[in-house]
Image (cartoon, rainbow, N blue to C red; front, side, top):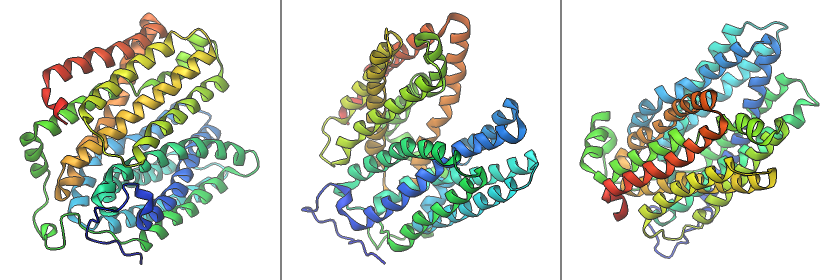
Length: 410
């Protein structure tokens, strides 16, 4: 096992990948996350192939996404009660076994959709528990000075896998049976399982703490949030881009078709460009340099996100749209990553899982924003929907920043 020192060396580099423990975990995570994105492509394609029904495709994605909103907080409670490394190991092991089951079901000539959906739901319940536990584990893998770098690198791995996974799935689907792609993803989970066996986490609050024996409740986290105006401000600020900004991925087919006269290829290209911008946005944060006046950076990045969206919907051609989309990815992920870093810095380790699980519930606002903006697009057109996104990000964020002065003190 790779031992991680329990004392924080002030001379230790802030760049988290210098830690062998964290580096091992990230290698395993990258392989597994690439497999997850390959699986998402395979899952949607498989359902469409054996049902030939857009309705069933929508239902399977509801089975996939709904648990993420419902199980985030229970996962956070478990992350504060039990060993996070072991908990994540068993979550990933369960995901691997259920992925094998999905592959096996697809070997049938005409698989039952409802049985298939049942196993997808079971797997999604475990997958929904992964983000709160994984994010709560990060501070237990690196020295305190490297935490910001660790969070940024974790986000960068997600965005990198988001580029590689779907492209690799498309290549493999052209040469192998779709069932084999599920099996390939299942075997890929071994990478993160091996990494979790090899690393050893530690308590950032020190070995003398006996918090695991205390009763772990959501009320403790809620009371802490009520007593911390700074944490409240971070959680409130997060809602704005989730409703009005991040649904751009859902609206992208409409924007590409109605504003730029592009087909699926152009739509895919724009999303890839935004992912490149997202990686660029997290790259500088991954260096672990001290972030001064984080509150101003948060506010400016959301406003920059809104301006980038306005530039995108006003773009006269693909080149201009691509440039704007790069900055959409850059500003959105700079905000998202910096928000997570700032929150982690203000939360005690014994409450980390529960507070992060509450913060991660902000993902539930993305579908709400997608419905709202989709309705605007249907009523007034794609241009007005895009303008609403950009203007709302700018105006509402500015209003919150003026009303909640604690943000400027971060």
